[in-house]
Image (cartoon, rainbow, N blue to C red; front, side, top):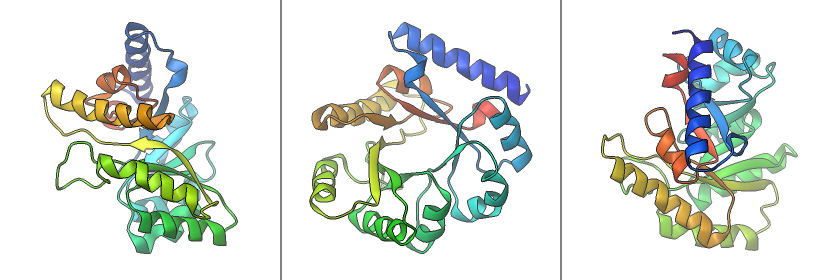
Length: 220
């Protein structure tokens, strides 16, 4: 399968799922996860209409960035962000989807302040409770958002919440993770939910996702 046919297939599946649950595909942003993919393939998928790409490793993003910045695509950093990589990632990324602590939020704010930039962020929530996963606990979201409002963090712009479901065939387990994030969104009157990857994006759409992060189904 070519990247073009993969992309058309994914778009069709998104549209069909949206129709089934009475949503519009226009509500969905598709982020093409381009980690481990060469710039030539990234250029190809952007030429097909992808407007958002996602990288999860700071070093890999730094290596690709001289070419990526020439493309008409928004860059999402979607992986765990180490403190010593905050500055370069803020320089390169339009969105950081993996903010999971007040300390990291503070560092992003001050890095963006130094660059006279407003950094778009998502808060990463560990809805599965898996110890090996990054992300704040669901009960911590409201207090962190309150702190953001009460502190002078004007160089970060909160966009929504992000989560990853477990790698499992158990649909109920996956769905419960997405439902947990949706419930937080409803309780706090938030907007964007980044959830759903190649193996579970249909469930994510059914449970209210507005941002999908898909790599394997586009590039395999």
